[in-house]
Image (tube, rainbow, N blue to C red; front, side, top):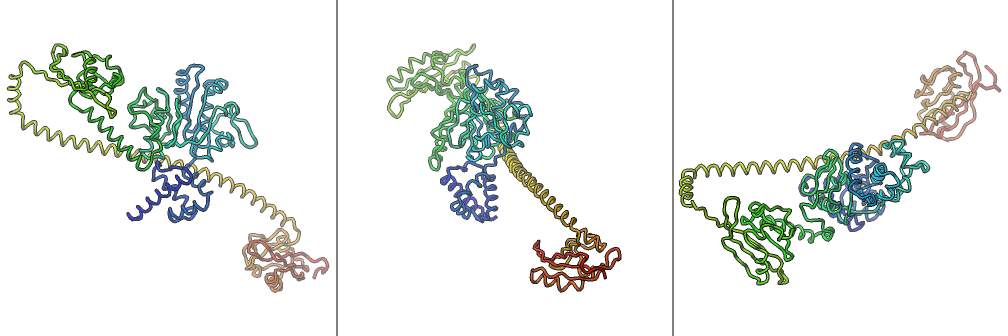
Length: 621
């Protein structure tokens, strides 16, 4: 594909995605383009659309095509307790901890995001019922199952599944939680009322909150990195502190160690850490698109850069808001005064720095009240056996409404050692000797740093590529599994049809065998297609000796040449002729008069049927 063709293809795909969003409310813009494009092109090939524009015309004229397309894009491959090892870990390690964290009368809230046809949500219901007992689970556990596919949700709400779906369950669990309903099995009604299904788009809609367990398996891998980041933000917001996130085997939280602890990387179970290293999910920004989304990203990036710059300021700096709470502690302040990020949000008066080396609380009030910067020079601070002298700058910050918003406190170390002159002389001598070595070392370090940085970037890129490849392989596996299920269904249908055809063939052979007269079927080329048992008894030739052979080339007791005109006339007119009586010799050597009747054959490709029977009226010759 040329660059121009690829550009047009990408542009056509984006136009089609915009049409799907505007026409049906399905926003696939956050999905990976490689996976999305492959599935849409698969459907286009099935309907014979040669371009995205042609396929859009098809969608506009055929409303039913939307459902078929969505089913192609949203592969609903699921099962009860899919990946049994992961579910066993969840049941043994996670569920008991969730139950222990909640009071006996408190509700346990669970969300199955991307639940497809509901098997995952019902698996969760069974798991908690086994842990708590059915009666307690009915009163305490509430499970939300959500998906964007309305057709899959309709199946989930019914709670009815064929016997094949329940094969993963032990017989005692199947009998305990499912009741037979015709040729299908329905989930027990009392627990079913605790499972709530609804349409929900995890990339756009506000998340379900206050969760103890969030299950989203093999769904994140379909989205690009930006969409995955937004989804994980929502999941972090939705979970209670210390609660659990359960992902699919192809999904990981590689860069979220500040907000999630790894419970089991092998089983993809994570725990939300207390607090969080990033701001909480903001519902107002979820549905912003186009220019507003770009402005939001620019503002967020600018805010992040500003925070990094403030943190890197070499002078120790602490900021306090108008309520007296610490809102900023930069890196230098953390090192010099032993502060941590956990001190952010605490009352400033609780920190030692608020009164040592100098009483700052009254100075902050004075600077705020007078709206001017105050400076304290040479404040003395004892550090072990040494004395440190600091200049302190208290600067009030005024907001857009001209009211005091915060106060910034900056410390500058002005300590002068008593042996400064001797130290300077020694350092000068050392510098003169070591200058060239330091310069060379600095150049080597810069080169090494660049090489390490380049290597680190390559490793990060390789890691992302491997992760993407793993997700693509998992997606392909999902598609192959779906195709395999379709082929199994087709194979079952073909087996049934083959059995029906075999039964019909046996029936017809039985009918022909039961006819006492000789019955011979010829095709339009006058080749033998069927030779029944009556013909074998009359002439002594077996079917395998005559089938597919020219009838008028056979040598047996009946002279065939006199029949040629009668057979050709029957072929031409399609009507049965009068019987023809011929002298013939049976397989036993007996001379008889044989009555031959020719009838048209209405079967495959036409032909004639010859009925040959020893004439009783004519007698033997």
